[in-house]
Length: 138
Image (cartoon, rainbow, N blue to C red; front, side):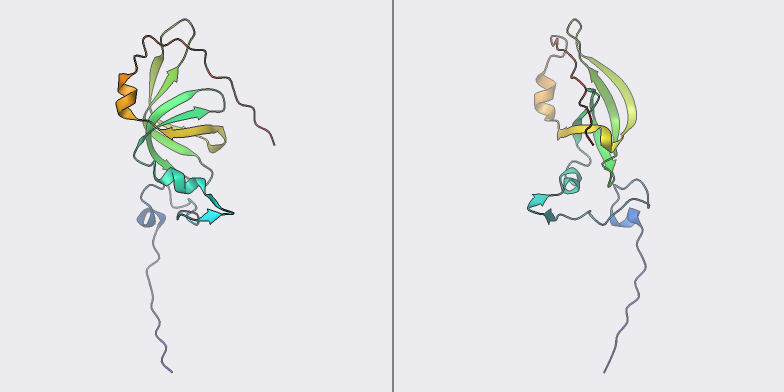
């Protein structure tokens, strides 16, 4: 009998997935897999890394920025982030926030922004009530 042993250098989280924030991030769910026929949220978010996204938070706030990273708790990091503040009496305000972290339990909806369509929207003409907060249920 012949036995071959291979010794591999253990890779850091940065080497495995450059979009991770730190080596303490969980990487066990970083591949596409189905759980009871449903594609895991991590799989969907991986395709959005590096793209401009819109995030609706549970407090009703709307953030737009480039998704830089996320972790197993759905905490997300946006770069070039701005908050779109809606009002029934004033135009939409885009408040620049730079890099911004949103806790995963505050993310209600996240989706890619179609930059071509977004550039056609005249936010000076839009008047809309802010979104209501979405209460947590435990």
